[in-house]
Length: 406
Image 1 (spheres, rainbow, N blue to C red):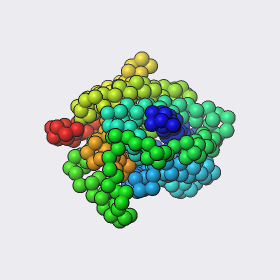
Image 2: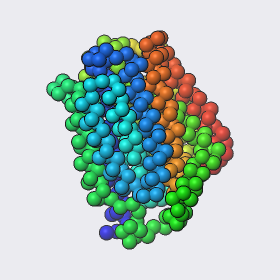
Image 3: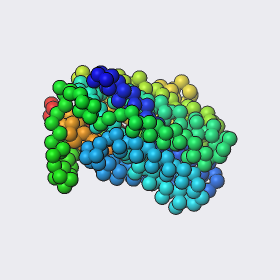
Image 4: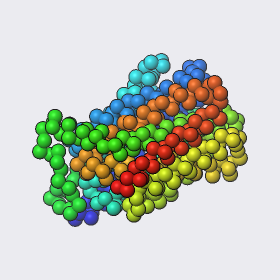
């Protein structure tokens, strides 16, 4: 089989399989109102589900990125899919807050085996000027799945209860994980092919400890990486804030039904699909930092608008959600490619894993923090804080932009 055909095969595999990870990650959003009613949980408690998921996901990224560089992304992505499915099923059997939190936290760790593996596969199989477009298509597919999950969850809840949301959708992920392992190879040389963009893998001849020092030394030894991680944390705070709270906001503030609220909230994901591809393509053609600044400003505008129009009509909500998606969802790929550009392909999974780890701390904080704000001062305070944090991201990315390297 030719290199071109293997590229297409690999691209289709991770574009189909990785978004299915979201069936076992964001399915919890649909069950939040039901859990609040059935267990009498507060916004702070249900926000803890988002917090424990992103906290263990962050921890897993820091470890699993290096393991993907060391042992190969094919194995790590497949294992993560199967293990995440098992944790979802266990979560569905939970009957106490502690039991659900433990299982859901373990799910977050196994979910962290996916994205860094995809980034390493993209670095192995595609030259630098095509990675933005290829990964942006994956990210767009993730947004589509994320948009569908709350609606699918609401439908499942009506027929099978909230536990069915953790039992049925993730089974698809497990099957996809097995198929992925049988279909994909780690790099062109594994199938006897050569590619002129492939860099020397400096970690391949190192011992485990030597490669550990080499990989993490680079990931945390460059000032641009530290600022990138902080900016990513800002975007993830806002992104997960919207994913977690938009359906509940629409349900509680506007008086819509659960199904209607999840349908309208899905616009946030669906509306960003086109901008994913646009920003990914642009990041291959131009410098990535100006694109990131533009997207962050758009996010701030959308969030402040939502603050002052809390009960906006459907048309205005659509515009707000589409613009917010540009600045919090579509920005993912230009940001995620910065560590690979700076540190090199042989540390692609480690560097993106480190970025995801530090970035997801922002997502971890939002769960409880925004829950407390909403309980005490309402949704306006939460959207205002997210808008300010988007502006903080602009300030943090400017020094990288001025460095004229990326």
